[in-house]
Image (cartoon, rainbow over all chains, first blue to last red; front, side, top):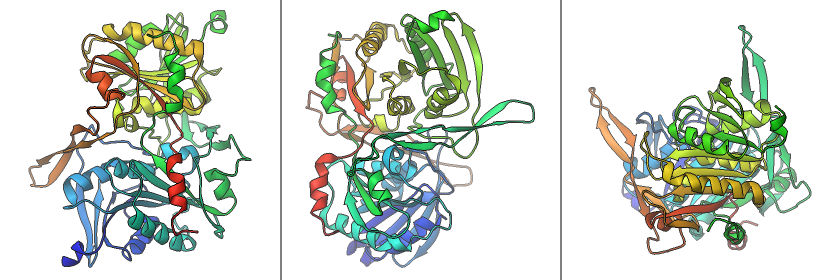
Length: 257
Length: 257
């Protein structure tokens, strides 16, 4: 594979599983930009955040190989997939990691729950330019075609420019026609009414996760939620340093020392 | 329970499970400060990050009730425990959420994998002053006594002062005698050599997660790793807004618009 040394190496993963429509779309797009290796979970791993598999071992297996593409499935989480790729599967460091295209939004606080973005944060920690792509549509049969040129352009620009240290991208597409792109911040908000209560035949309660997103700043025009609600692709530069630097002085005044 | 209306309500969870030594120590300490409700996983959920249970329902059950304390176990992740507490179990908003005391460090990049800190970020998202406590000792029988006065003081000061919007605390204790406390930042670093490869009797490989932490700034004296390595309790103010504001200008110069 002499071509492997001429073209960028692109690692792809997701949290919807190796067979999801979104990762197939992303794979075909990335093959226009480089050699592609897919290492994706062997089934759905939505909302797995940066979870790691620690109580049992993980495995991977090759599921497809053709010119410019090798695909593997892995028994672990999205973050496990990235770790296993970098440590055991790839023979050189990838030039780009892309995760998705996720069936469902990862805007606002969803970034902290998302398995898609968990994989992206993991790539970022390891110094690899990393991007998560998602659309605001949970359907298994979602149409991704309206988003494809944006995905390709954002990935190409990231390959060309790189990303600042410890920074990755969280890219979401709105529903329907795209008005353009906006570089925006993570919207402040939270989930409410989060459980649907059911009773089993023995009369014991059980709870399904559900809920409504409550936007705490609906009028702010510089957030990902605003961009998506107004037809724009949202690009949130996202960091793995969670330090709240601006809070350090206040805590240093506490009666602790 | 008239006392419930006079004393602060403190919600406790963890990722080592409701029976772990660390959460029992934390519970006894917090009972000095308020009414305590424990809602903790029914078994170990280490490295579950902010993972949510979405493919099956969750349940909870009462496991102990005495003056000033009610304890529940829950079938979900640490983040599920917090969501279920706020939505279904508690009849008023807690004044404080504490998670831990974790058997093992959650310093540096470990914050993004930690179930302990996942619960803390969840409390923070919901506007509750939230603190994660951990010690640099994985032993099930770890001694927590040397850390107790610090835990109590930090919790009391948080109850008194509150925390800035969308900010929580990640508190870790060093091994051995404590020299004092430091308000520090999340150290830059990553894990390497992350898997131990084994072969099953059929000759197929499987992989256990392991690894070494590589500190990218061992000489910096303002990081949590430095504090812990020098005998200090580390307090990292931690935020749920992952936006890399400082990267926005650069990305706005890309050929995307």
